[in-house]
Amino acid sequence: MSGILPELQNDPRVAFTYGVNKITAQYQPAPGAAWQSTPAEVYELPWNDEIEDRSLYGRRPQQENEVGIGLTLAREYGLEVGENIELAINGKRAEYEITGIFQTLSNYGNIIRMVTNDLDQFAGANGSYGDYMLVLSNGTDKWEYAKELSEKYGGKFSFIASKSNGENITGVLRPAVGTVLTLLLLVTILTTVNLTFILVRREQRLIGLLKAMGMTSWQILKIHSWRNCLSALAGNSLGLMFGVFVIPDLLTPYARLLGITEFPFANSLAGTIVSFVLLPFCAEQNQ
Image (cartoon, rainbow, N blue to C red):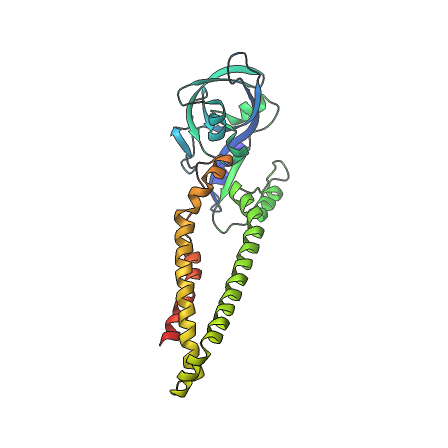
């Protein structure tokens, strides 16, 4: 596979490439302790600058005798940057220096990151082949591109379109989030309608007085709509502040179970626009 990488890198549909294999490594947490198994990612040097360094402490490994440790694994066994860890890989035991501790969703942070100068040779020692990732440019259909490459090279190589961790999580959460948002929208609409109905029933005398003064039903409706809009805007503002400043801290303990320090919350422009979608309508009603 490495032989055709230069050709693929010149394809404008390919943003960048890098080599990485997943293997199983055995490690001994302490002298005399039982050996444990954990997944390990082996990257081919040199590091591609496009690959984000998610090291929380230290740096990612730059030599074959260095490793990075996932956050959850480091916490479980008290591993720190600068310590040595003994690993058994491909039937050989060796000591590695821990140069960094990083966060990742892979295996909930119970993972080791290693490097090699020749991925094909490293994988060949285990009877397998080096795997190389093609990160495609925006707008490129990875499923169609994988099919095209398979046909182009006549099946000599396997091209598999895979989902990232983010896509997997999105796929799991999207139905649940969609259902919750739909229910919240229905509750908001029903609550607003009920409050308006109660308000109108409670102020029938006032409405009658306003009509006697010459106001039309539409003018009276605008008054009540504006009052409800103020309540909705106040609720949306409080909800936004609570969601941005309070909820992330409450969910941080659960984020650590996934191997990350905190949930990657980001202010959504679309969500803000939707939250204040009533503002123009309210302004119009107040005119």
